[in-house]
Structure formats: structure tokens, C-alpha cells
Amino acid sequence: MKNGYLDEHGRNILTSLSKEGVFPSPYNFVAYNCPPTDGYVIHDSTLREGEQTPGVIFTIGDKKKIAEKLDAVGIQQIETGFPVASEKQRKGVKALVNMDLDTEIFCFARAKHEDIDAVAETGADGIIISFSISEHHRRHKFHGMTKEEYLNRLDDTISYAEKYGLFIVYTAEDSTRENDLDFLKKAFKKAEEAGANRARIADTLGCINPSGIAYLVRETKSVLDIPLEVHCHNDMGLALANSLAAVEAGASTISATVNGLGERSGVTPTEEVIAALHVIFGIKTFDMSQLTELSRFVESITGVRTAPNKPVTGENACTHCSGIHQHGILMNPTTYEVYPPELVGQKRRVYIDELCGSHGILYVAEKKLGMNISRDTARKVISKIKRAYLEEDRQSAYTLTELEKLILEAQSAEAGGTAAVP
Ligand code: ZN
Image (tube, rainbow, N blue to C red; front, top):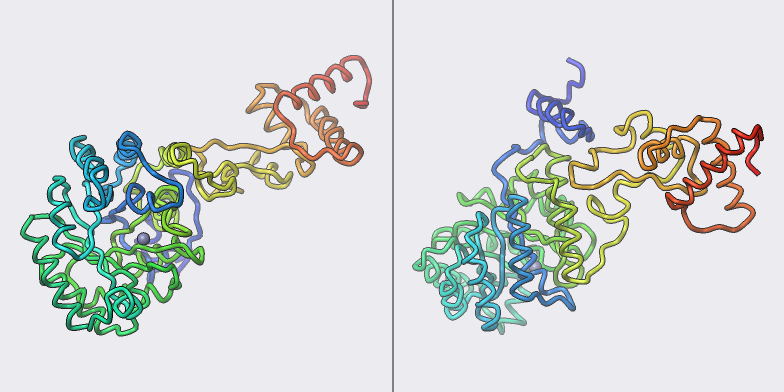
């Protein structure tokens, strides 16, 4: 069989993706690393971790609007606040509980009874119990707490939350820097035995690499019956790669925030991980068509600007600049687009500047200006554009209005019998 490195599962995924116009690398689907295509949960923490972005404070109204949009994408769980922290946090969570969304409402808590009481009082569906495990944290934050003391308090805390009937996620904060792997596994197992419904590996400082987290996920999973989640910070720009490596290794829940908001450099971006799961692994659980709107909505509410070259939802993510690429797109968009822009709610754009070619002019004339122009006209327009950059030191791209004017000038010169555009 051709492409012998693919098994039937991999071939089926590629076929199914191709029907949507999605053409990723086939090497994503080699038999030895292809994860199942269903059973994944996105645990979105925009409203909790995202609020730890410097300068971001959500009003309760903001939280409701964002929750609605997350729900519409099909995100199954949202982490909505830290109830013990303030009356406003508690009110915000309760407002979301009362919205009757499909998404489940979770809250953040430390390993303290008062935090758990505050979560239960909101009527939330689930609780994240964050309890630092690394030696750095136990020694400095918890005044030298021993491993035995840690396990005892963990047991007590999870058992206490269990009485409330909450869905319990145990987060071993700073898991990736706890160097005693046996202790780490013992803690996760202890939480499971005490009633935790999911275990969460937290790369709190964003300091692990993809192979490191894959190893940790496999090792942790080997002792657990409950599902495993990862919460990856982005300090080294690896949050998305680490989340995908964790999925390959068997994690089934990914913690993320819209636009990657969060403490310091933030965490795995929700919209990017959803698109990557779809395009890289054929996991089609979520409605991708609303991702761009979601990202831009959160950008407008928070005032935290995203970069134009941000993957998936950035302004340039589906924009083609070079003449070579524009020519390819005109022949067939799959030449330079791994997925159709509409799949993520984007629009294809072709940028007209010094690097553009006549095919770019033909494309924009037809698709954006509704003008059918000859190749000769396009060549005349592009030569005028290139002269402007050479002779007039122009630095900006051409707007549609400017381009239309150039085309009309070229056509009128042609009609008047003049061969060249002045
Ligand atoms: Zn975090």
C-alpha cells in the first residue's frame, strides 16, 4: 500500500479532513502516535486564569457574554472565578450558574475547607483544587511541609469536597518541577482514592518541553483510572506544543484561555488548541467557525491586543503577501492554506504591495472589486505599483480604492489606444 507508514485509522482521518479542504502533514497520523479522535474536553479558564492577566478585570456582564460565546463553541467546562476571594467573584459565578448554559461551571479553590465551602455555596458544578506539590513550593510557601503532611492534607481536602458532590479536579500546582516522580504519582493516586474525578498536571512556570510532558503524562496515567488534564503555561512559547504532546501521550482534557490570557505569558490559547486538535489530529469536537469572533470579542473586552501574526485568528493568519503565494492561491487555495479560512471564521485576504504579482491583482480585482480585467491590464497595474515603491519610497500597502483607481486608469489608457500606463 502507498504511504505504508499510515494505518487505516490515519488514512480515514486524512480522508475525512480532505473533505473539508484541510490538508495537514500525513506524518501526524503515523500509527504510533495517532491519538483517538473523540473524548476530549476543553476546560476554558479565561474567566479565572484570564483575569490574572495584568490589567484585566471582568465585570459580571463581561463574564456572562464571554461564557455565552464559549458555550456556543461547544466548550464543555469553564472555570469562572475564585469564590473565596471576594463577594464580586461569588456573585459572578452565581450569575453564570443561573444562565443555564450547556457548559459546566467550575471554580478555583486552594486546599482549604473555607475555599471549598465558598465554591459549593455558588451552586457550581465543579471545583479545581489547586495544591502546590513541588519542593520549591512546599518548602517556601508551605514552610517546609513534608511529603507525608502533603498527602494527608490532600486526602482530607479532596474528601471534604467530595461530600458536596462537586466534580473535583485535583491540580498538583508546579507538578513539572516536583522531581520525585514516585511522590507525584502517589499524590495523584491519593487524590483519586479520596474522590477526585480528574487529575491535572500543571506546568505552572511553563518550563517543561514536549517530550518531558509526554513522559510525565504517560507515567501519571499508568497509575490512574481517572482522566488526566494538562494546564500549560507559555513562558517559553511551548504551551500549545506541550498540550498537543500531552494529548498524544494520553491526556484528554486541556486547560486553556482565549487569546492565551493569564499570569505572566499566559497559557495555551483556547482557539489555537481547538484548531490544532482539528487540523493536526482530526479531532472535530468543537465549532471552529466561531473562533475568530470569540478571539476578537475577548480582545475588545479586555483591551489586550493580539498580534497580527497570531495563529488562527490573527489579522494576517489568512493573508497572502508574496506574488508566488498569490499565484498559488489563484490556482488553488490548498497550495498555501492548510485549511479554508471560513473553517475558523476568517476571511482570505490578498495584500497588494511591492512583493505582489499580476496574479494578486487579478485575484483582488475579481474577488474584492468584482472587476474582470485582462492579464495585460493586471501587468500594467503591477508595474505602476512597483514603480511607486522604487521611485516614490512608498511604504504602505495599496487599499482597494487605490487599486480600483489604478485599474480604471490602465483600462482607460488602453481604451484610448495608449499602450503603457504613464
Ligand atoms: Zn495557571
